[in-house]
Length: 121
Length: 107
Image 1 (tube, rainbow over the protein chains, first blue to last red):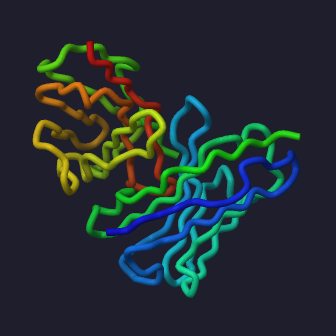
Image 2: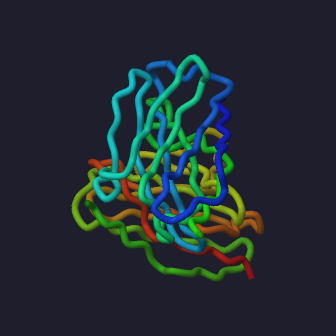
């Protein structure tokens, strides 16, 4: 069983950098069976995959956000993080961390509860 | 990127009725489709993976089918707790994308 918990500021000013951290419990961040993702959902809208990082630190990002996104992992702290630069109001969303593995067929089977981030001055 | 189109947008049914939700891909995704249930204020929950396999702990009334570009999620006999938005998602290539969702309302 894996538990995920997002943390970070709920309000970010336009043009600044959004930073969120996901803390993993119940299983090891550095297990080679898990991949760690960020997914967002604007209020009242659908889901958008942002990117993922493997236990070894390899990353893949959504091309629509690639120029602004950085995902990193700190296995010693059992955490992985999201940075999204140059934010605008369009980046206002609930941000979820999620994991997937071979046991779920590489679909997102564990999710955090979500963190609402509002971009506003 | 592959676009997933879900229909209908909203489905309003009574308890015990059968719900049929559709997901169509803009190009073939083989059988690499999953279905999620999202209730208000909650994270999505994985129901079905690879088109037809139930995830751990998912009741048998949920089933999935399809391949190529057309997929279906069926709820055989609706329970009041099935009121939610349902999303399909493909993992055929990068980036994985989600459909826009179907809202299931229980009368």
